Length: 161
Image 1 (tube, rainbow, N blue to C red):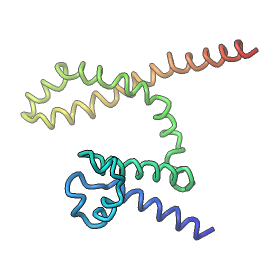
Image 2: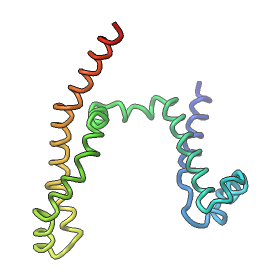
Image 3: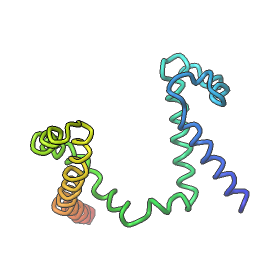
């Protein structure tokens, strides 16, 4: 059993290594030079093909390891992370309108006050964008997503009967 854990851990480390594929100069980088020679010719002929090939292998390998090692799954099974999964579409749909809305109202005055664009962005994000986005996403999830799931399940039961 211990040897299986060592194998999965080694695959995890190798997947992380592949995922750190250098943007430029992979043919000259330690460890990556050998892998570059193993890349199928179909991918090697494209400008970013070599990198894309090995990043795809890395993603699949890491997914496989995450599915097989319970210790790596624990952080993703907490209540907060599951809640983020529930509201993820709402976060995606709502974050840009909130950022757009806050730019002139909040960020521009903060930039003028602080004299720094970066400070304005940081204060706007921490004080307004993040809390408001989470709040509106939660409302959207509770009002629309939960109701839509409930409706489609009842519709499925009605159609299947």
